[in-house]
Image (cartoon, rainbow, N blue to C red; front, side):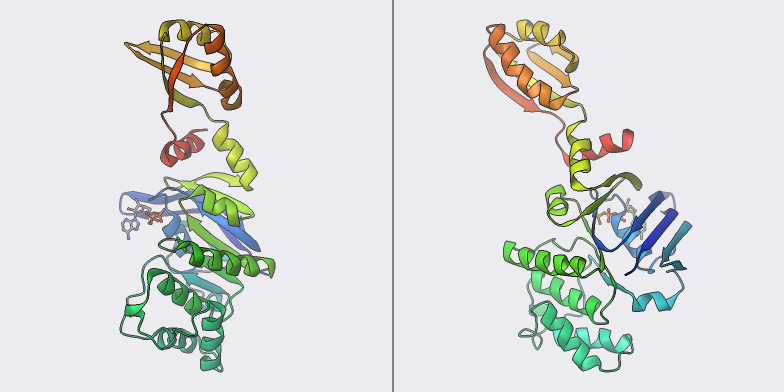
Length: 303
Ligand SMILES: Nc1ncnc2c1ncn2[C@@H]1O[C@H](COP(=O)(O)OP(=O)(O)OP(=O)(O)O)[C@@H](O)[C@H]1O
């Protein structure tokens, strides 16, 4: 069993701070690295894999630095987000090349075993250029698994997969997690991460925004203030009734538009229809204003 430790790790590209003072531990089982596009997930994963040096701080695998430490590659497998560009190779040749690069005793057998794990043995003799996106993803995974690593890092592995391929990958990663491997995958979709990860790390704008199991992350996201615009047949009366309640932090009436900021989501969901009914106001429309993932994430960062 292997554990990765990220200690006060930063990475910048010129003026751009891609990863900003992140400290986290990734142990056995499945960890989801959640964050919107550009959050720094790929940069962090490349540092975890020993493919990119941190600008500051350290990444260690079972106590040894991963950067400039080729031994670590025996324990680590990386499935990058970028498409493999070896379109002229067959899937089998590509995975075999990976087995040979690792200097395995029987690269042919290792390649076949890895292809079988991802159910790609039948397609092994076809050119990668002819594969679907999901098949490319699986062949990249076979190349990363060829040396049977204790740690598997996957950058946005579900991108472009159809539901069947998705289920297959979920099953595969679950089995690895249950076998005591350390699996980390990135995603910008909360539901995807929730479904699979026993532990979630949230990265936003390079910063480590939250950490916990999916219940904790859900709670953080649900507890934040919610903003709505409301349409009714008497916005003025509704505003007056709402402003009196502790669940609303702000009520404003801008011409015909009623805006409300609710501090307690569940209470407000129950309050609004009750207040409207008691005031004899007919509700036409309630529209959440800040449900984009970016705004949810930025709330987590500002806490
Ligand atoms: N080689 C590079 N040179 C300059 N800037 C870079 C480089 N790689 C990444 N960045 C910048 O660092 C930030 C983080 O990028 P990164 O790719 O790590 O994020 P991400 O969360 O993986 O996003 P995505 O899901 O869109 O790939 C972005 O602002 C990006 O533009």
